[in-house]
Length: 128
Image 1 (cartoon, helix red, strand yellow):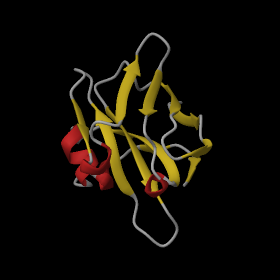
Image 2: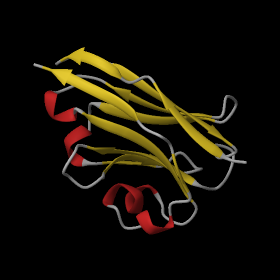
Image 3: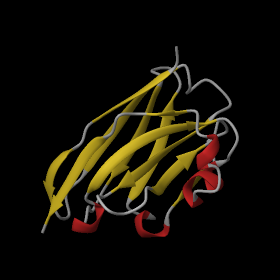
């Protein structure tokens, strides 16, 4: 059964980097779009970055130029490279698999109702 398991979160100082990984068993070789979302308590879940099976990507404005999403079909892993982290990046980060939406729809939250699977989340904390 396909599943998603995130790892790589942690506590860092502003300006530092982290790489999140999502073991996306059964998804990276499929036609699904894969994405990263984040959520802080009391706020709605936000689309951060997404990638489709052709490698097309989309990012929310606040992370453009700092974050890079990629998928390794050989290892079945989705990555989120996060550079120049800011305190406002602090959140629980989730990966997701979407059989319907493309990267733009995923990041804009236009296909959330179609998302087939969510990971359990990994916490990222950035201190100033």
